[in-house]
Image (tube, rainbow, N blue to C red; front, side, top):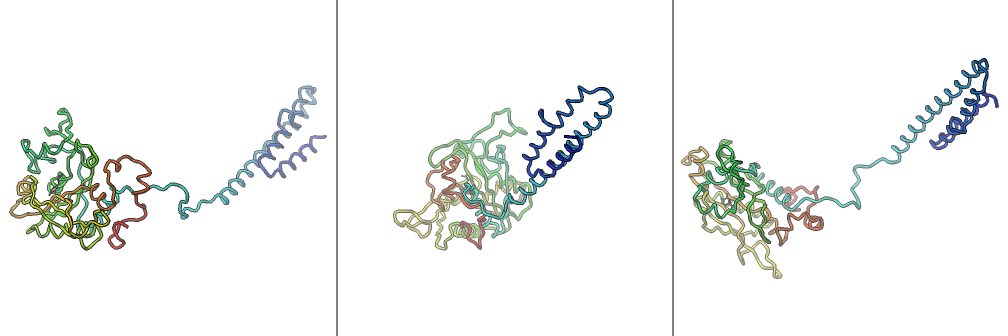
Length: 359
Ligand code: DAH
């Protein structure tokens, strides 16, 4: 076969190859070890110098034009293949995920979102403070001096002495109350904040974990009294438990940072042997609260004759258990997917007051 015919045949084969596999077969038939072009290239070894001078450029030209044609065709086929896949493998991002396991919102996050929503409606902002706290913010400024027996009650995780900062011993905060101090020392009253977050105590059983969650509330303004506290807590608890028949009982109590201090119980009824919030067949303690102590207001550099306020604090995990019926706190932090699937919430169901906070 002469070179020209070979070239025409190969070009035709390249032109009609409609898959990468077919094109590869043409390449092997021409340029492979046993290929027709390779065979021609081999003949050059046996040629006389004159012959090689005329045939060499022709054979090499053939190889070059075939290689170029193969490369171009390969690029065409690859582009066509990509376009075909782009057309057929299009992903519709608006379709719901079907049988893939879906993540859920942890009840603690859900309850914190519900609380933020409820309190935002009453004009409260969300405040935060560090989990590694100094002694002054966690205790002293809250009227819990070094010798105070309340310190012993907190089962505090202390950092080693050589990690003190500005002469202050560091602790893992034992409650969210130091955020009261951080807020009062960093912004001007009037103040209305809630502060949800993690707290730590060296304690562990079915109802206590070394890390748990609290939410703090603080209002500082002029002429604030116990009536404002009671209304706020009643409005909050009715919205949270999503029922109007929530009854509160305020009991005198003691906290170093409030005077007077009250513990708040919520009434429950017993239905089919189970306690249900609402009514007043029995009482469950849900909150600590009171009027912010003069000494705390003073410690933050404010004049207690001008500014008054109330504060409250409660366990977020416990609130979640009361509303959603879990009975072992430890399971909250096991990360067991079955528990999360059972108690978790749909991420797209954002709590709103109009839609029902616990929907
Ligand atoms: N900090 C208290 C605790 O962890 C809870 C508490 C009680 C917070 C009364 C308050 C309060 O703001 O007024 O046990």
